[in-house]
Length: 616
Image (cartoon, rainbow, N blue to C red; front, side, top):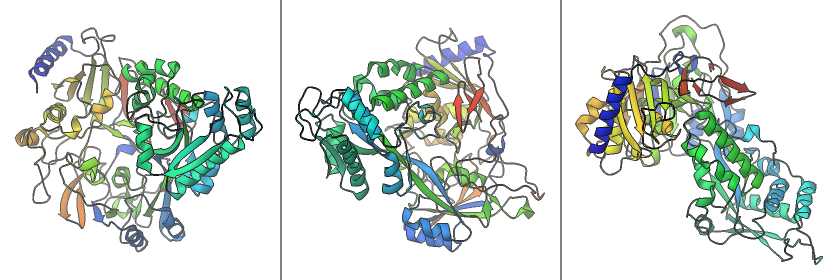
């Protein structure tokens, strides 16, 4: 750690000692039905790169879950098979059209909006995607708490050619020379080129956009070509009219909404592909990036999406669905995670035996993985390959629930403060104070305390050769244990997003990694069971056969594990095949507050509109 951060850390610790007690923090029950687990005895990941084999093994009862998304070609066979359940999940893959707003006449918002109204998204989803996509207008899935989709006053799902033509007429796009094509408002001819990659699906989507423009008497051509060629031009602000792209947006930290479309990024390569400039959009930037209050950040997120939908610098066409499959003859209560589907952390954590003679406890759940684990060192896994396995053994302050919402996990409450709410904090700084639950132990029996959490953050930041988990910590000024079960973290910038930067990182044991050292993180290469990994998660590694399987055993001392009973269960739990969560408890859990005020949760239909931050 740098000497500057050491001085700041010491000074802040002294301030806290002088100012105790802290401002009140609202804390609710941390033990909700959703949090209780695990129930199975063992979890086995079996390496199987071939999807044909994965499906066949599921049908034959050799595995209980297919851990990856399933190709649509297997859907009919799976739906017809006995003891097999199929689930659909919006998988956060968006197909969209980006329009060059710096080029005339595409800089006229009425033209872009007319096209959005004319494109038949329902046709794209039902016919081109064969029902495996959902019409969408905003760039975040509806289930996300940051999404504006449920609150949009206008939607562009179907095609309204009459209204679209009216908009073009009013904007001055008239066929002056009677050649069958409209001219731009200045009287010049123009021709729209819609670039897409050379794949059947993308060509069909581009042709649907071409057809919509033809219905509007606009001269246009869909042009399939090398994806990387046109993507490079679009990303570096070269010449183009319109281009079809796909994106899997980050849905936990949506600050990219501000950075990617703010006017000042229109000249920065790899930002703001449509070259969009809008003063109203820009006016929300500071609130989105620098506010520390959840409700203000939520408001900025929704308003920015509303502007994008109305101004149409991009036209989102759909969000695709992924197919998951599992057997329902041995286990129940699989969770259809909003991002990973059935083959998710939550399914393995919540699955229970259907045979109630042992009180729903026990059993060996078998699932597939299409890629073997490159290393048990989670810090060097490229792009988190294998994290669906390794993640079973690690915990974080916050966990993302199966519905995409934040849940307190190791933390039972937190307080977020700035100079405006606490004059003892430096101006421009954000201080997060987390209170931890107190019954957590590492797998070797050592208590997990605030020391481990503070050490983890400092370790990631101070490691040599850029530890990947240092991402987002560049503004970290101090992280220290301000009590046995209280950790204080301070950044030299104000932002709500520091919460996710800190809260979602896997916590590592101080007593192990202090020995490994800052330079040893890359060379650390444990292979269980030869080397025992000290972890805190619901499962611990018991065996590994390279190129074959990884086996994990349940952690009997896990802090959320329910008491093992042998009382038969008389109630029936519905197997989850949609995004509903039978045992989700909106009341219990953890209250995450700004300042000392907690504003209650408001439930709006099937979506949760939050004006305060209440977490399960």
